[in-house]
Image (cartoon, rainbow, N blue to C red; front, side):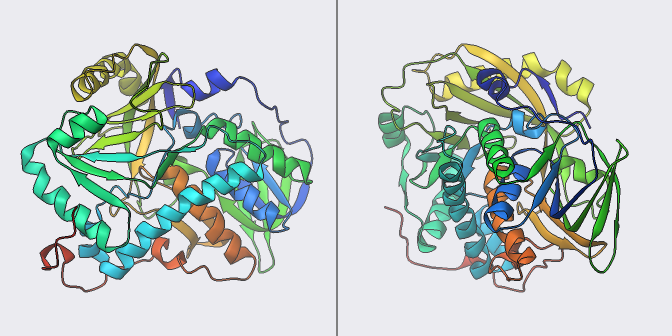
Length: 417
């Protein structure tokens, strides 16, 4: 699958961090991880820290799939609002999912510390904007629901938002729990950690099949070599949709650009910002003083159509951000497109699948991809070391809605302030 087009920023800025061989021998290990992007890297890191031997197989070069095009915004917010998720699964489950994503930011931070570098990680406020007056009532209700769940955030009206953040809107909620990272660098640093502890990483090596027995799996590659392991973990992202039969993800095309460095005096802590819209505009700052802007999603994933639309879409993004924040004049430095996927409920699919014996899946679809990747690493590592993670059921393939009275019509004390 052609996952990206244009000039993704992270590999160009970071350069050639590490090189990896193609598979040139049979291997034996505890766990074979299929996928050498940020998800596979965090998975391999967690398993290695748990004392398991790991082999990683990547069909491209490491980090050059969706990871290279990720905007790497780390949020507890799910693409589905807390109110909507509560209507679907009940308030306790919805709040647990949101808290799990909040903890995922801490897990990413812990990973950067474990591999010995910041990897562009920093914590920044996040701003969820109401672009129109008609959006404010719903977002105020959402803000109240999140406050009741224990999240630290507050509502700013249009004037407060403009004075404090410089964003033109009808108001919005500001949260202290958010962050960002350089996904390409973290991927390579994590895999360097794995290799330093006897793990093996092969790229340009495609898995063509795997056979499972009661005791393990035999994974065969296009290079004629095999890996025998106790378990296999699929961290193949959007390409998993080619063989998982459940149709768990809808694939789209998305677009982004990153600016030349700008003066960020007002935003010294950085920011993550996005609008309540469909498709929505989103942006974040980088650790080298740039602004990365994305959005303008299309409901198709044809690579030729996607890449042909790139320059026009980047222009639209630039104009929209200019209206949102007039005092930041952005000059695009690099622009790119990529395949993006979302699930019906906004949650990831993590763990076992009934049709795939001795396999685990780490599928962090949606706008929380890297946060979900960190959660996946923790949940699956627990499963493969004989433990049951308390959040595993949230992201299971067979999760089902629970009967509940919708939270959105409950009458509770207004706690916005």
